[in-house]
Amino acid sequence: MVIKAFLFDLDGVIVDTAIFHYQAWRRMANELGFDISEEFNEQLKGVSRVESLEIILQHGGLTLPEERKAELAAQKNQWYLDLVSRMTPNDILPGVPAFFSQVRDAGIKTALGSVSKNARLILDRIGMSDAFGTVIDGNKITRGKPDPEVFLKGADELGVSPADCVVFEDAVAGIDAAKRADMIAVGIGSPDVLTQADIVVPSLEHLTVPQLLKSLDRTAGLDVY
Ligand code: G6P
Ligand code: MG
Image (cartoon, rainbow, N blue to C red; front, side, top):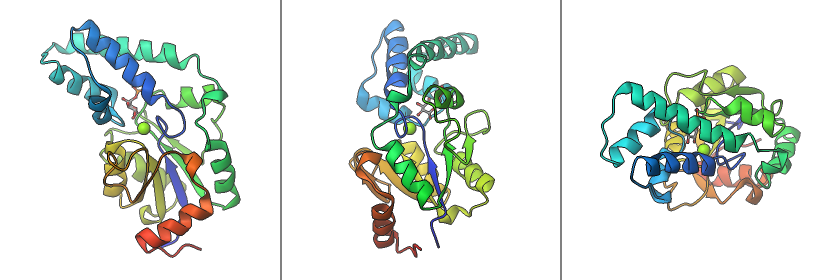
């Protein structure tokens, strides 16, 4: 087993759009007469728009007709896009550019693996459209995380076996998806939340590629290089 590819989630790993998703969903919940906490929001991370809406409505004790749900999902997306439209390359999370240049130097392939249908738009806004070997987004998959489809498709498009891939994820559902894909999962965030990750770091700023390969070697017993 040799690490050949890194697969990155977008929201909360490359950019902090996770907070925009939360703000837009919270606004919707408030208009419907209830609130959602940051803790509750953890279970929405990495989950598709439609599934997130179902989870939120259930939390608020609301059953709504399909038509109304479609309106709410579209409204949330509009609020979200208003926030995203103000993004620039300055919104790339600290440590990401330096980490990517090390990844390139190490000859490791890269993929984006996001459930978001807005992923391409965000990559354009932050000037990272050409940063990945392949981009798998919500338009290319039929099942959201924790289903492994998004990462398996990424590995397939890169021509790399899943066991030779490392996934970078800030979401519980995303770590589950990586493990179900038989990949190594690096959690970005808190070890108390991302309990199933192989290792957890606060952000990519706290990682270098050689360091990471070394610690994965220890943690997962890998042959690296
Ligand atoms: C990512 C985010 C989720 C979001 C999903 C769909 O996985 O972590 O919070 O619900 O994408 O995003 P979209 O932009 O298509 O609504
Ligand atoms: Mg995420």
